[in-house]
Length: 150
Image (cartoon, rainbow, N blue to C red; front, top):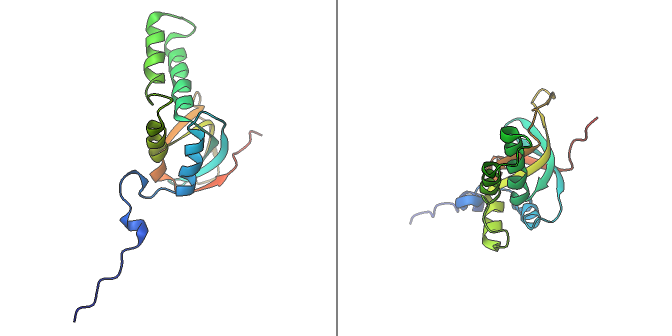
């Protein structure tokens, strides 16, 4: 008589984009994907704390488009600048497609007003980096609420 192998824990059976992802954090992000509101959060990732406000992928790409265009073109409203902004802003796809919103919320978290703290407790200042995008599978822990500027 053979002894059956012990059951594999449910967490190790997870596959694809939800593996190692906190389902509660994913739920919060999915509510933000409708471009409605923001939530303050602090994430623990690779020994650092990353703090800011959760925003939708569309708000992130719109913000990145304007930030990059301003860095490259300044106030010049050239056709090339407009093409760049449109190209970057359209990266997440159709804003009204629920599948796109769900897929993006399974993989990434987007923050604005970002602040970083290293493992030694030092705040890191990144000039010109008000937006941040990270993989959900890299989040080790999180807390509701964000660092305030002193």
